[in-house]
Image (tube, rainbow, N blue to C red):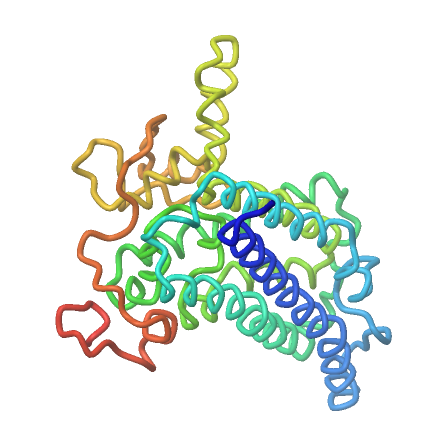
Length: 340
């Protein structure tokens, strides 16, 4: 018979998986219903602009519902669920480091990222494009799909690299990004763990919307899957790259891989609590999908080791709403960076 502890743990992971699934359903409803209605309003309010077909958005040959119902959409959800379950069974979530406050941050962050800030950014950018640049709708729709995937991946990730690097350069932006680094362990939940202002100003989302508007819809959809695959796995506690480093005949392959895309080893180093261990590189390894940006711009640190300490050394675990809601909410603890 299952022990009470085992039953409670299974119920806990079921609850978390269900919460994340519902989060995706809410997002789906927002994209599937709110966006077409908004675009129809734009067309009726500004009839001189080029009209969109009913229930369509600037995804080349894709309706909104086809986008949200696409196989890739559910593949990303499945990927997240599989890795989070793997993390659960490896004992990650049993750690005392994961306080109730940390879980509030994880789930509120995911909700904030996918259900609130992403649709807002998508809507506002689309409205501006529809109003000012309607003549350029699907302008690059004739570009081959394979080339479109490369273009969308490179441009979107290049933008994110500089935004991420800026967050570690400018104090005001660091405070908005800081919550991404306060997690006590690496986990897939870190992918949505950022403050509202950091997410709302996220330039790569604007670039993505522009690319879709210009006719790279299908290419973006495919590229987004690969970006999610790399980003989720790089943040996960599942170190898929570690056993591959030990395989001698794979050495040339892994040499290329770790210099091309973000791996758990290189990205975990970015989340290390300190650089003093010779592994961590807090101000470096900024690439999300591609590591080539770090290689090109001198911020790369190649490592195949994993730091024992993740997070921030000077962390006072501010309430979840302070970390996600700064600067609207500020810490009452004068020692905190978020108190000012």
